[in-house]
Image (cartoon, protein in one colour):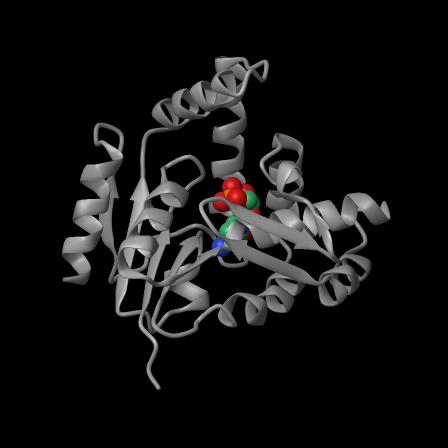
Amino acid sequence: MHIPVLTIDGPSGAGKGTVSRIVAKKLGWNYLDSGSIYRSLAIALQKTSVDLANVSEIVKVAQVMALEFECGDELIVKLNGEDITSRLGLESTGHIASRIAALPDVRRVLLQKQQDFRQAPGLVADGRDMGTVVFPDAENKVFLTASAAKRAERRYKQLIEKEIDANLIQITREIEERDRRDMERKAAPLAMAVDALYIDSSEMTIDAVVEDVLNLIR
Ligand code: DC
C-alpha cells in the first residue's frame, strides 16, 4: 500500500516542529520529529560517556538504543525505557546532536529508524534531509526557513517563558554556528529538495504557514 509523506525540512527554529505537529493532527497522520532521534542518541552517548571522536563506539550505541515515541499533545520520548523528554530540548543536547549528525555512519544507522515511521494513513516528517535523503519519493515537500535573527528571537522568548536564563546575542551566535555545521557537512547537508515549496516564515504567523502547507496537500 502506498503511504503518503509530507516532508518539512529547514534550519532549527524555523517553526518546523510546531507546523508539522498541527498539520499532522489536522490530517490525522503520524508525525516524525527526526531531530529528536539525533537528540536521543546524543543523550544515550552522554549516559555512556562515549568519546565523540570514537565513531565506531557511537555507531554501536546508535544500533542498540531502543526508542519509544508517544505522540500525544506533547511528544514523549523514552530511551531504553527511561523518559528523556525533559533533556531533549537542552542546548547541550542539540549541540552534541549536530556534531554526531555530521557522521555518515551514524546517519546510515538512523535511516531505517526514521523510515519505519511511514505508517498508514500518512506521515509528516520534519528534519533537515527528509525530502532529500530519507523520503526522496515524498509527494509533498516543504522547505521552511526564517532569518537567523528571527529564529534566535523566537528561541529567546521560548526560554524566557520557561523561566530559563537566556542571552539573545549568545543564542544568535549558536544558531548561526549550528546552521553552518548543518549546511556545510558532507553527509546529507541541510539543503532544499529541488521539488520543495520554499516558505520564509520570518514575517508569517504559524497559522499562515499551516495554511500554505495544507494548500500544497490539497
Ligand atoms: O531539529 P533539531 O534541532 O532537533 O535537530 C538537532 C540536530 O540534529 C541538528 O542540529 C542536526 C541534526 N539533524 C539532522 O542532521 N538531520 C535531521 N533530519 C534532523 C536533525
